[in-house]
Length: 111
Length: 111
Picture 1 (cartoon, rainbow over the protein chains, first blue to last red):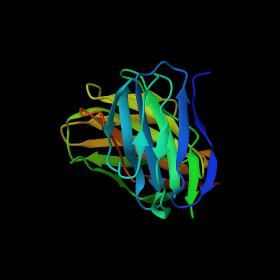
Picture 2 (cartoon, helix red, strand yellow):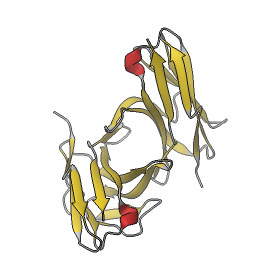
Picture 3 (cartoon, rainbow over the protein chains, first blue to last red):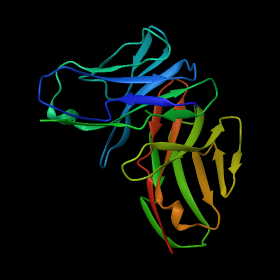
Picture 4 (cartoon, each protein chain N blue to C red):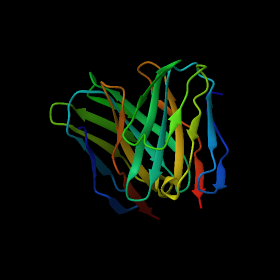
């Protein structure tokens, strides 16, 4: 089954404690992306990757890092989380001229 | 800078009614446009993808149109059902590989 998986699904952490949210897709897609969704602000793109070792900033990259060492994986790293990064995070992938497929989301609370 | 607007922000209709959701974008240089559905607390489900060279796409009771020159897309839902109640999001994929989402239309279909 074609899918995008994210882990963890729920995470509570404290300010400054480094964390990683993993994302994996099994569709051999080159393009992957991370979004955050906040009430009243909608979905905003954090980072995207067009292929292995090729990443670029979206609209809200501050405070986040990404890496793309393998085609299937695109982890999101918060080196020093802050309360304003409390949000619902989505990972997505898309193939050439295809739809974007979204993961189930990761709900993050930073205290 | 590309901006995507969805009107109305919320809509309540009786079951059986046909309805139209609107999406407008400021820069016509898009690669494609995609409509999604999001249920409360859940991820995004792709409904329809329209390539920039296409005028419309249909899937079941759904029909999406695209007018690139005027920066508009519409999602037509025929014979609405209570199960159609959800938030509907449109997103444009730009030539620069970014994805910009609208804020969504929250639809409620009354039985």
